[in-house]
Length: 269
Image (cartoon, rainbow, N blue to C red):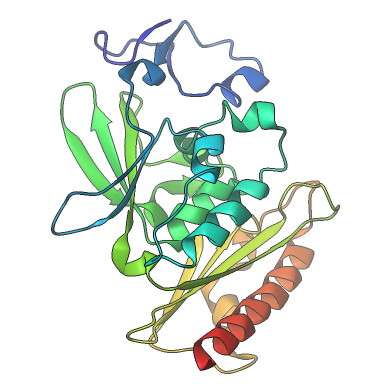
């Protein structure tokens, strides 16, 4: 194992964060590990960027560190959102203390709850390369398909920024699985902007990659079903032992309506 930025990328190199996914299955092509944790990034901090204030989450921040974060009062709905996404791991405290936010994102699995969190919060991802170049991509565009992201082999995820303009709004989360302690088969998160009334809905776990809907205002009861069917082609519903596509679609439509109804009640007060 070597530090992440030790030298140029070589065939057989693999990025190492927490390692819970990397070590969970054989890696016959791996020759050496590039340790991102050796770079000692601060796990969580308030963004100092005057153009985009918010919360910066290091890729090496563990699930346990994120779960202990206490958001300021100006972000009243962020705490429950974080806890809901962390609980969706359904993992032991041992895993929580090792698994990283960035690792969950880069594994690009449909049920990755950190993908759900940062996409629903309109986050952006700072990506760096070993050649010193860096770029920022929307979290909604990081995952291309199951197990595939936009990162090149010699690039790594450095930081995820959740913008303050989104964190000040209201979130509502619903999750479904085949079993009480089963992997997420559908995870739906809604957001309502308190100033403009704009509504967004993010679907993960049920689809091969995150899917979002953005509206100028809250949709009417029953309206989301048609919008989701128009947005998600039949082949985009995920199919594995944790749920058939038709069932995932049905659960997503049901959860989406529950999220819409909750945000309607909250904003009506």
